[in-house]
Amino acid sequence: MIIDKKKSYTISFLVITYILCLIGLIFVYSSSSAFAFEKNKCANFYLNKQAVGILLGSIALLFARFISLKKIYKFSFIFFLFSLFLTALTIITPLGQTIHGSKRWLFFHGFGFQPSELLKVSLILYLAYFLNRKQFQLNSFVRGYLPFLTVLSVVSLILLKQPDFGQTITLGASSFLIFYLGGCKIKHLMVTLFSSVPLVIGLIFAQPYRLKRIMTFLDPWSDPKGAGFQIIQSLIAIGSGKLYGLGIAQSKQKFFYLPMQHTDFVFSIIAEETGFIGCFAIISLYLTYLYVGFKLSTFVESTFCKSVILGFIILINLQVLINLCVTTGLLPTKGIGLPFISYGKSAIICNLFMVGILLNCLKNEKELESLDTTLAYSGHSR
Image 1 (cartoon, rainbow, N blue to C red):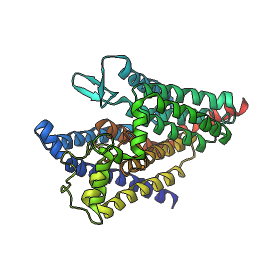
Image 2 (image 1 turned 45 degrees about the horizontal axis):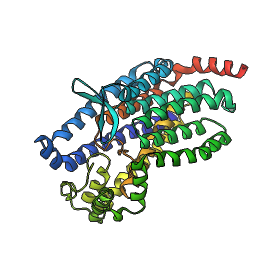
Image 3 (image 1 turned 90 degrees about the horizontal axis):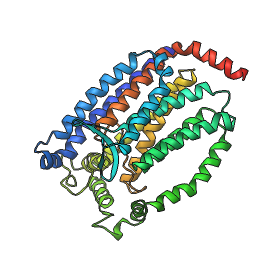
Image 4 (image 1 turned 180 degrees about the vertical axis):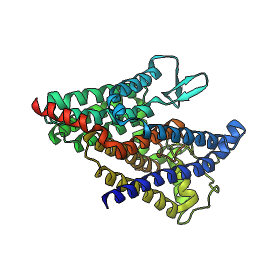
């Protein structure tokens, strides 16, 4: 019976993943067609690129699903260092290209990639590896918590240098939640949380554009044709949808009113075209995804596998929460897309790759039994 439930939840998880991808294809095309035709003389330009991203992501999913889980575990630290190095290349080499004020992309011979998306995956894997190795030392500040804090600080410094404040907050919050669920002392986390408040405030005041975003968030109508333009247009799109929406592909805001309409603000177009009913359906899918993901974590016993599953689910749904709050004016703009739906090849490939690792954990957890036993014994003995 347990096996049947595990299989049922796994299938549901995979089905919801691809339903979200399909919804993404529909609304990437709907929201970007006018912009794509104006910029590239091809209305399908972003649709085609997103479809390629899903195809490559599906290949990455299959690769991650069938590769040895023991190898994923053993090389998780090297994978993390590699993705951290690639992310650092965006700010220390000419390969990094500035788009919308941030150097988040690497371009080589016409091929573009956002390494911070890969960094998200590798950080989850490394934290899971770390929690598994340090499961008997997590209560120790020096041996358990300080190394985690050091790693997170290095990641944050690189992301802030791009700068990518939104990604820093997202990864930081996800990491602390993973560490808390992994058994870390709540006292350590709370001290870090409260001591980081002045640091966050200092980072906001250090860059004028961040402070401007905060002021715009508080009163977007103070500058309706400037800084407040995007959020006002987003709210107009959402309000225009009413109960049933204007109909798919019938959005008016996508005609050069709402910037980033196929990336960070695709939810606003969904709301305009499908109304409250469509928004409710999208949010319900993500909530179901959250529920199914947490249920799947109960079917594994390995600390590594459980942390991987919980980490991925936390990261995805935290991004969803931030994106929905930004598009509805409840948070300042962050540059965080809607997972599986917003346009972005790097994001869709890395997210599907992570789904493959998650499925691998569910299927091949027993590969780690000898490692877990050895580590548990050595950790306990210390």
